[in-house]
Length: 272
Image (tube, rainbow, N blue to C red; front, side):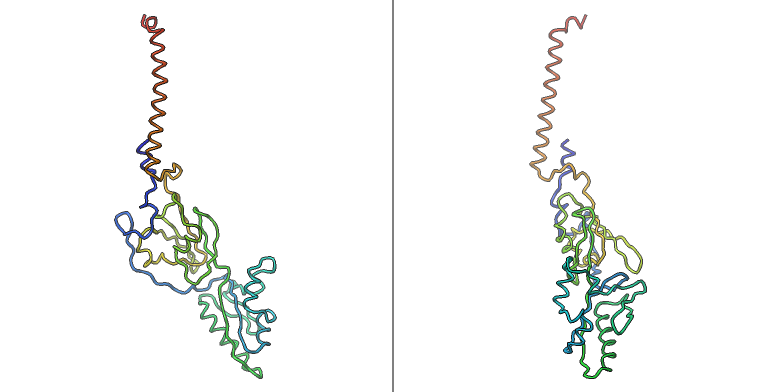
């Protein structure tokens, strides 16, 4: 019982972050190289066109709705949906933008799409009397990652770069009984699905390829073996051990009393 209790202890080494690598905590090569997200099929783009000409604003921005109003209405499920103000990337990798038609955007960053739309709109609007330059804002909407095994659910990515620590903070950390040394990330890129396994306890994680997560990543966290026994303090081990010994002594005393009773009253007859 003592051995089981000690092996089930959740020590600080099992749950603390930013630890020095050793034979139990792996070293990671300095491979950190953040790359801007490249658009994929079924991504949704929020596009807002800025211009000093009110007619241009009205033409491209849902009747002249301001950027702040559009964002508020997109976030209000009782008002409408993303479909009203966003552009879905179709199976061919295109979005259908008013007046300039199909625009191929798959494999490009939002910055590249911004310049592309500004160039195409500039060519078109130059033909209109009283031409004024336009500026375009492009963002990916409805970006998220999923977690399985610890606070399972789907969570929104609300910034350009999100680290693994920020993702874990959003789910309320991993708890005491979830493994930190075998976290898996399921990631799809260019139609290929890969599974990456890493130890998030190592301080070297901040310089590795595992530091940043991407939209649509699935993070899998498994339970620590024996977690259901639930021992995480030395005092708990002592208490469980003492209780087990006390219970054993109690059972032994009952059995021994019974044996003594039998020997006392039936011992002579039994011996004959």
